[in-house]
Structure formats: structure tokens, C-alpha cells
Image (tube, rainbow, N blue to C red):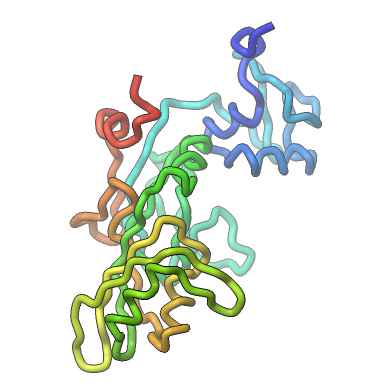
Length: 244
């Protein structure tokens, strides 16, 4: 029997519903947090058909809506998580309620700001995070110190910091004012706090970090806290896999 007749695998269904990525949903299944028609789901090879009731952590999940993508100017001081054990304010608490449930594509840490892409589709989020896309993430970075242009150029060859090897980083000195300097930094696969750690390794502590682009999507003139939906036409143009 084809999967079309069976419906969608539950991880795929929940990912499209914006609950989490397929990988995270499989962990939730193993933890016994998901029920289908009031029966605990124990196998990822479980299928959802129209009319089925899916419950996650006791909450009924609405069927997947149309795929949506948003640009959001994340302010400094928010964490990119749905639940923060330390009780800090989160990105998702600050969003307009009419957006519904969305998840982030990648993250920005507490003290970073700028462009954060949001979607209601966990499968799309996973797809756009993959390094295989080759999407460049571009940042404006203010550092304290006197950057050496030659040292910045060598970051393109990769660098190892405290035993962790980081891939190629494009870094260019833009301006210097007193003891501070502004850099343009770009990378294709950002690890947690990568820019801050690499710059600290060069003796250049970061005092401000703003993401200005994620692949073809730009921060532009958006103000902190603003959200703008990406049109379906632009999504199809910029994400080839979505084109009919």
C-alpha cells in the first residue's frame, strides 16, 4: 500500500504542523509524549490520516496549515527557545499572537540581534538549516581591539580554538573608531557562539553582533521586533525545492 493511502508519517505530519523538526519529534516519540487517537505512539512508522487526533504533551495539534516563512528582527536580550529553564524572555513570547506557532531556522544567542527566519513548518526549518544548502550567513560585528587584516584573512582557511575546528570564515575590516572596530563576517555553517569564540581567540572581544543576511533573505531596514512574512512567490524563487 502506498504512503499516500496510509497518510503521512507522524514525524513528517508534526514537522509540517510546526511542532518541531522530524529528529526532535522522533525523540518525543521515544519519550512517550505523543498520542494518536488517544493511543501512545511508540513507532516513528506511524501514519496520520485526515480526521485523526494527534496530541503532544497533552495538547491537541491542529493539522498542518499552508507553509509560511517570516523575517524577524530579533532584538538583543531574547533567547531563541520556546522554554527557557532560567526564565529569561524568549523570542516566541515576544511575537504577535496572530503568527500562531512557529519555530526558528537556526538560532541567535541572547546577546546577538538581527535577522532570524521563522516558519510554521518544521520540515522547511530543517531543510534551510542544512549546510548542504551552502547559504551564507552574514554579520556586522563590533569588536574591541585593533584587528590585523592579514589575521582576519587567514580565517578563510579555518581555525582551531580550544580543540574545536571551525570551518572557513570570511572576515573583513570595515572601519576603526578609537579602540573599537566594525567587521563584516560571513560563514556557511555557524556553530554555537562561533564568531564570538573565534574573535576572542584573536584578542578581539565582541561587543555587538548583528546578523544582516541568511542566504538570500536580508534584514534590510526592519526595526528590532518587527516581523514580515515572505510571500509565496519569493519563497518559490529563493527556495528552488518549493517550486512547482
